[in-house]
Image (tube, rainbow, N blue to C red; front, side):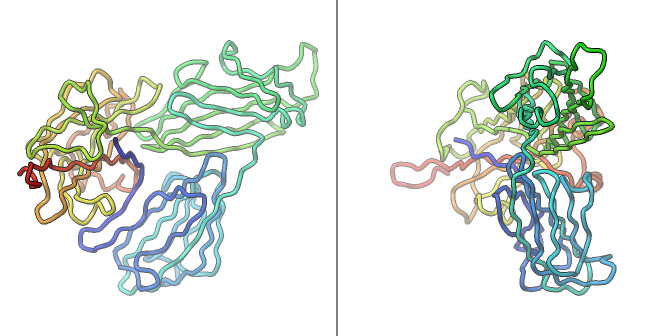
Length: 413
């Protein structure tokens, strides 16, 4: 059994705390480190609030106490989507009951501090509300699902039976309430484009007017886009013409599994949890990206071992970091597919700690032939990664692994 999670943590080796992460509950709270005590003067925390597709996020700051002024040092930033690549809704360091609402199901909060004097910080809460259900979109691992309300179409003067994609041979499923398009990423006229940081899958839903010479209906162009930024899918559906414009944006995440196998043939996965092993035993792992796009590939950037799942920052051991192998027993294996990576290392135990070992790996998804992407850069130093340190990775956690006991109940060491 494998425990899989996707999240972003910002942590500090010199301090016994961490901040930031993925918040995926329908409602919740977030606060600066050590709140209501003074926050540290070296914080850089990023929270991504991602609720269900086709819901919006409302964020309310109930308490804010920082340096004030022009917010040059300590401040909070709120982004309408992923950090740095989305519109900045606000940057502040003081005020009361500031409220922000996203245009999609993802809102990002960044807290930064580097001033000499620190203060109480901030405390905020968020909740989610349903978005307009006239048009909805999901970016699933194998296809895009666009759903259009028949009531909405009727109110605009359109027929459900006259909607089609770029490839009109790909027909929708029409129910009593909805028109549903399941759009593959590699067919039905879907167009793929992008660069080293972005992959966009696009299609177009149009309405065919009657065979008459004229029509008094507005032209309907429903653009459907799934946009990938590192490990984040931006799901966008919008209608564009001179008279009518509707925009919907959703966000989802790659589905990546990390699985232990019994041997280097990678034929028999391990279903036991905990996975009991001998000291120095070969541990074989496979990371698998679920996607129908054949032009994507996986790269193992970092794998870190820890004796606890609750805190993967205090006591750690690097297997590989920033593409640089740190453990002498680490080795890669041939994979028949680019979206699968296979590797191994030998079992060990932490001294003066519990017998369990958890593995947290950061993987990067790239376009197969984009030779400027992270997947082709190999081992790089942290200083070279500085420009993109705020970008996310696909993070998966596997384990626990524990050493077998002998008949007397002793660990085999």
